[in-house]
Amino acid sequence: MPVSEGGTITEGFGRTTVARTGIDTSILHKGSHSASFFDVSRAAGEGVEIVDFCIPCNPYFPTPEMFDELTRDLKSILKYYPSDSSTITKKLAGVLGLHPQTVAMANGSTELITWIDHLLIKESVAIPIPTFGRWTDQPMETGKRVDMFPLQERDGFRLDLEEYVQFIRERKSRVAVVCNVNNPDGHYIPRRDVIRFMDALSDLDLVVVDESFIDFSDAERYPSVGPDAVIRPNAVVLKSLGKNFGLHGIRFGYMLANPAIAGKIAKMLPKWNLNSLAEKVVHMISDHEMEYEESLRLLSRDRRSMGRELQRIQGLTVFPSQGNFFLVKLPNEWSGVALRDYLVANHGIMTRECGNKLGMTSQFMRLVVRPAGDVDRLVDGMLDYAQRFHTRSVYDTDPLESTPRARWADAAYDDQPDSLIQYPSQRSGNDYTARRAAVG
Image (spheres, rainbow, N blue to C red):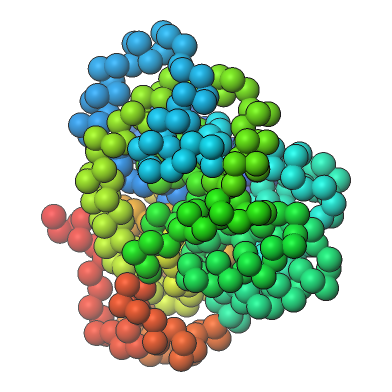
């Protein structure tokens, strides 16, 4: 690995990288989960700005005015007890137009996953992989059988529900989980198909639809199956407010189910399991609905723009997404671990390398959708990294003309509605526009 401006780069698994940001990247190699934003920020040199392409949350919400309101109320938020969980849950149900007996609210969706595992998963659970890791890790930690249904790269990691149902029947799984939109690939399943899936498995102990990222989808006007789950005997829908509202640090999420299931979970949750900051935000939601809708529109715009810019990097495979992130496969000669370390050490950019996700390898990365200026910084960093493998510019030829069509692309994607990401088959040669930030 060459010496970079301002420091030495050392590439390798578990080895230290120190460079322009002053970050010792050994912190990225500790534990199975990504380092926190706070870990990286503390490790950075003075005045270094960290751009987060790792943690998938809404960059446009809350608005600056909402943060000002939270700041003004911070003293009382921190000083006094919150209301009990049932009071906050009733308020949230009222804001969202839900029946309070069908809602259980918790300290993040992972707390709900934990209680679902303890109370509702008795023997076995089926789950497509790759997906959110707690759906495999949590039941394995408590000794359940986890039946993993591998999604295929050649299919773009798209889930075929009919094949999945057949797998569940063959394995005799008692609980089935599906994440829609799925993390990390961003694949979206139409609402009508998810409803058919729930009905096909009405004899199971439980069917869980994790909709933590569904608000970011623009494929349908009403994509959620929450209203459908609450009138079914064994269905649960999970929601993550932290991701949708760009407030991961608050830790709040909720589930929807019929009153018997929701009540069983709610009774096990601590009486004060939600903090005062979460309560404050719940009361703010109804006053800022328009701002939230605008944030989703802006993010959808950025997703299209970011997809186009990433497609310009030669050899990079970009999978279509309806989430607030993209799954990309790196060129064969690139290392996901080395690229992750290089970007944070030299450009102050946090990314998610997927080598520790079941069903993935370190050739895959998940990149969160961010505004155009941040994407310019990411693309510049990836181009800098690519220079060690290319003696000419990666834009000397059109990557989409020189690279064979991805194996997972087929005619079905060409027929998708306009609301989904479309990648044209032709681009204008050397027309590279990603460096907008450099020119103003």
